[in-house]
Image (cartoon, rainbow, N blue to C red; front, side):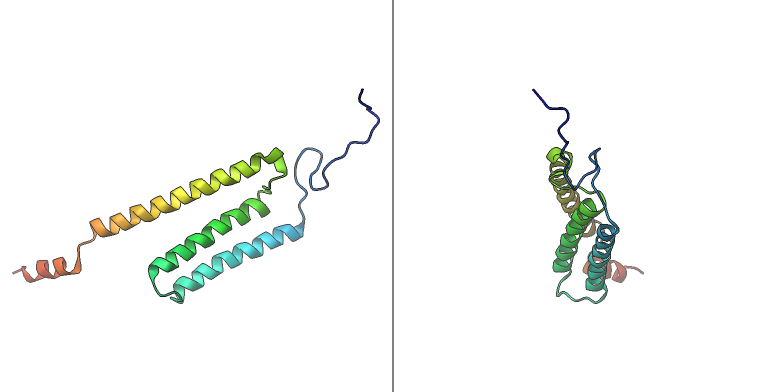
Length: 131
């Protein structure tokens, strides 16, 4: 038999309806991380810090993935304890979709660049053949 007079034990991290406790400190931490994770890739591109555009692109993609996780944790409050673990599954699904979208975007942009833009020597030949 269950004792209805026994006190209910709730997780200290959540309110009664499953909404996580949030503090101004968590929001400020998320905001600062977001600004830093945006400023560093901006600096890498504008300062041409890395030796090749390919390396720069990979570093920016890594920063983008980290920023998505920061937003999910600090602003959407997704963690393994919330919603009985379903949020962790949503996080994994989001990361898989993120990788697919980023890889697909890079693939499309690369092929558009290589198939749509004329090569410089072809352009020179075209200009020399004009009357």
